[in-house]
View 1 (tube, rainbow, N blue to C red):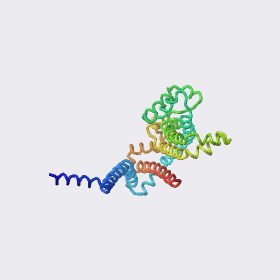
View 2: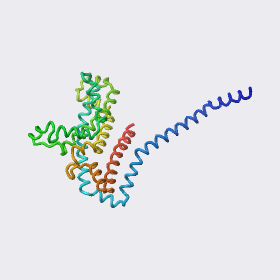
View 3: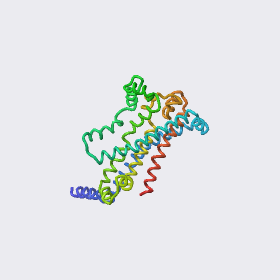
View 4: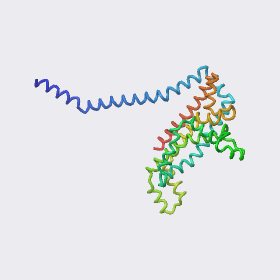
Length: 287
């Protein structure tokens, strides 16, 4: 009986030895890393591989021919125009929004802070429909638009508004944590040395929040490139006029032009991937 108890005690003591604990910890770490890598590969790499495979299913020549289609070029150009304009607007106003929410407290602060996340919760299709209710032929602002001879619904301005709405949170949510961690001590020090408000912002504040700003720009740009539901509803997907690259992909799939659809989707996916990876590499070089 004593021998059995002693053996059990020795076995438990051996299992608690540092080398055994380290071995168990290393095994768990490898398992966790394997699960994470498999998860990321399933959700990101597998779809990209499927796009590349579909794009080159009939060879490189067929894919290049599909991408050289004037409709593809027109759709890609419109997509870039909307994305760049969206980034320009949110790069300025989104940064100002983040600054105000972090630096100031005012009545309704909590409401504004919550409302900017609304695009995360509202379906883009609903966004497009709301814009039609506002700017359509029988919309709330229809008389004003008619008097000014402006067209928003089923035109590029409506698509820009839809894209601005769905990309609203990205810039603010990337910049706000950086501003909060940065604090105000260095800004106050610059002010006491005679720096103006703009000088303080450009020489002290902006360098500190630049990576939050860059990530906000990249996420906004990538989201604008891939927007589909809102621009489809408010723009109508009119070929050659309001057809972005995502809408071209939708039409090409509907018309069974699979090589063209896969090739265009591959371009969008790879562009977004290059932007994100490039930003991460630049950040690593700065460290």
